[in-house]
Image (cartoon, rainbow, N blue to C red):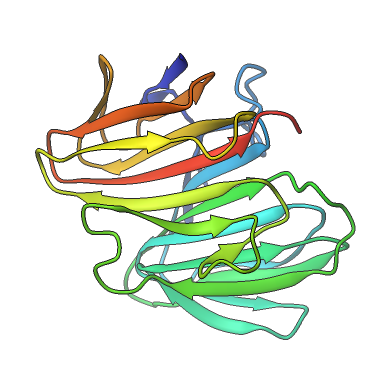
Length: 237
């Protein structure tokens, strides 16, 4: 098993006043040739958006975009006519495909909004743009991993144009789980939202990440109440 540890403070950062962002991979003005992507995982941005502020209408194409609100509420509009507000407990997917415009604003005039925005290289280009969102059923993340994204349209969660699976889980202190990889040519990228976890001898703390390759299974132990995101990603773009 090959692992690489990425401490929280090793991420790129940007402060635009209305937006405070931490970048796990090279993005905008942050460039690190050793942090370009992990397989087909291209972007993992940890954004804090000031009240009433946000991203005006802007274009995307040929990218699978997953948004996970962590705190507050995010208002979305796009060129397909979708308009919605998502909050903690929701997950949003947008297949940009042949081209889409969208905007994202903090829906509150008083509280900050915190989100993860994730980009995944697709395995099909120029597909018809698509939008979808999911509210995670109450209790489904408690001491278990809940699948929020997969490549399968028939699954109960969201799907994208890539052989990738995303899981969210909230675990009590003292819990332990085993994770089995979804495909032999995939790797896993773990991002700890809060708490503390051990994978082998490696400890992960809040906003730390760990990439894993060349294994079919690994164990996680949680020494504090922990919220974790696991992304099971093709290693070849």
